[in-house]
Image (cartoon, rainbow, N blue to C red):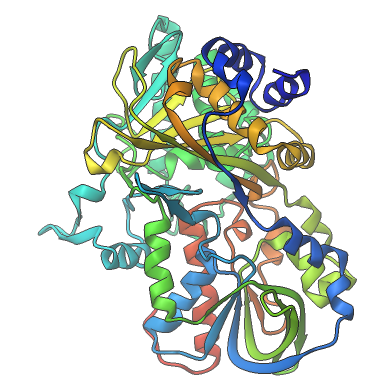
Length: 551
């Protein structure tokens, strides 16, 4: 193996992974025995927005629409879903990519469908009418018990066994490294769980949870929002936690949801990860199990499919929106029709800006001329997602294959098994692997990721997993890699509850924002909520009759 290739693999997943890979996969010296491609957001299309070169091109045709929705991620699709449910049809979605779904999109092959990003939704424990309605539309919510509790489709709840951890040469059930844990380690975990239960049970004078999903339902009392000013690591240290195992466990959570380290995650966001997924009925009761997961072979692509159906053919793909000008009574926008290479001008009464907020500095005319200072505070984590098609299951040592499989000493988040929900335990499968760059400066990590070749990326994935699965290289038939340069906004200290961030949620004329990054928490529930709120505000302003979907 050439030195440059070794260096690229080590830069992505570390030297220990490289050593394991070289020992397990000697045959790669003569060329990759499997195929694959690099997929991902169309960087060239995005680059054309950044350069501003499209602003000087003449308009080829003009059109008009009541509401222009920019972006077919979960926020934009949820806005369209809201309009459709209200019987309002005068909208159109403009999507830069060729496929809708944002970071919840999915793919598939002859073996299985698989996710290219988000792959589960926690069961809503304390009421989320909009999410429950969508879940009922895909058949996940099947009814209610006599006391009003939701009943979930068994085949969509994550099947057992659910989670395991590769730790010191063996697989163990669960994600906390219990093997060999000292009495102090166990006591720390118990105390941490009690703290999270206490936070989950806390309510303010208005009856609001201290930590809720979506975030807008959380209390804004300073007693809890002050936690946004310090890092999760600082909160742990201040509260007397010191064990390496607990710190790893907490950081796995921040890496998993936010792509960030304990140092780069606000304590409020870190606590929210745990406390918001507990029912929180009593701070003194036994520790509750977190919310169960709803998942599908294609991940949240199942939900995307339903939302796309609701949009009713009103999605325009290959549409690079590069200019939005708010005006009296609406807005004018211009977009590049990629297939035709033509500039189109659209007059709209309203715009739902369902794109990542950082893009507005180049697209939204008032911000292009004078961007809000706080816009620079948005940090976006890069991710790599790889789907490995295997001819058979890798050999195991310890607890058997689960849906979620995590390696303790890895820079990655491990992998989920796309075929897990089918009940098939033998034969071909697809593993969906996730790599984040927590603790690294996002721009440099993004450059490292985007400059790597497919061979280097595929080998890095195999290198990371070969420590737990030495036979993996002999089973791989294909490795497709998806690069997310700006996968999600990081809730760094001081970000989530900063008043200037909240100010950026306000409309600019008739341009309303809708994206998970507006809340500071990159969650499906936040994306859906923001899209619904934008759509309902437009319906209300136009005097349309509708039943709110918001709780």
